[in-house]
Image (spheres, one colour):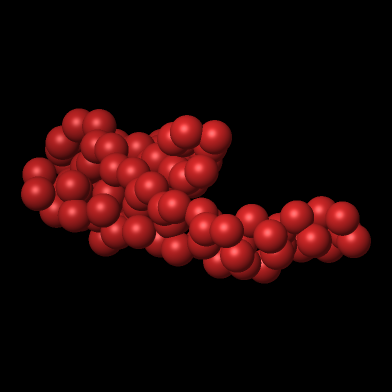
Length: 105
């Protein structure tokens, strides 16, 4: 499955548009990650634990997007857009939402 943030892939004309597709991944943060992130914020630096959680959520969302594309018979996803948000009471969860256009090249 070809996935790109661009609206086309040079040399691969779109034969059929299957439509917009969407997916998301929501992961809960936990007390240990929050504590480690607070320490990092205090002393400076990157929060590797949160970076890993976000990377996992992004990978999960993209895998789900590919499944949506496969359901409609697409072999590529164009114009992919990723968004990151916090959700839930006190923003305790992290959400990655992803959208794109399913096409047949």
